[in-house]
Amino acid sequence: MLRDMETGKNNREERMINRGFPAYVTSAGWLGYSQEKIERLLKGFMSQGWRHFKIKVGQDLEDDKRRCKIVRDVIGEDRTLMVDANQKWSVKEAVDWMKELAPYKPRWIEEPTSPDDILGHATIAEALRPLGIKVATGEMCQNRVVFKQLLQAKAIDYCQIDACRLGGVNEVLAVYLMAKKFNGEWEWEWGTGIVSGGGLGTGIVSGGMERLGL
Image 1 (tube, rainbow, N blue to C red):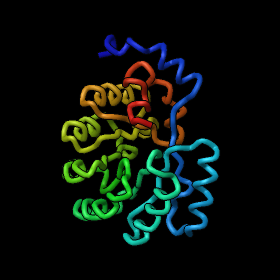
Image 2 (tube, rainbow, N blue to C red; image 1 turned 90 degrees about the vertical axis):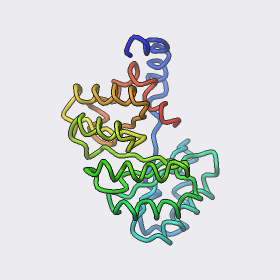
Image 3 (cartoon, rainbow, N blue to C red; image 1 turned 30 degrees about the horizontal axis):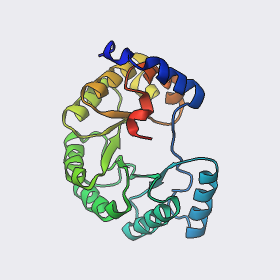
């Protein structure tokens, strides 16, 4: 697997040095923001070159729909919207809620339910796949075994790795390789996890964050 990925490695390293990781911003997406504040923040970030935006959801469905519509109207169809429920829902709630948000074309739903519920995530992922909505989780995963089970069960599409919680470079590398094996995609979660391992992916998982299409 590693030998196969040597092709293009230099180009990926050059891209990393010159451009870094693509990233998203959540600052316009907190609960309780007015339309004026959301629009103002989004336009400000867009003027700085941001193209990927995440908002928090799960407290009030109608307000989530309101904010998703605002974001989609401002950023247009060629930029990315993601949503994050912070483990708020049961499995059924997650599926039902996300069906209501599907018209706004979110790329993923992050942490839709308990991070330990592997089969629950699998049920959610299967239900949302026809809608083009993927499932992201992993920042609460403590070891490669949980990621292995999530990937084997087709329960997630994006591995959100926190290198500190995972326990260091060896565990991170194992998850990278499993994501490649299962055709999963991965994303660095914020914080010290980025610092402690963010550069490792350039030669391993098909260009790192480029796997996300970001």
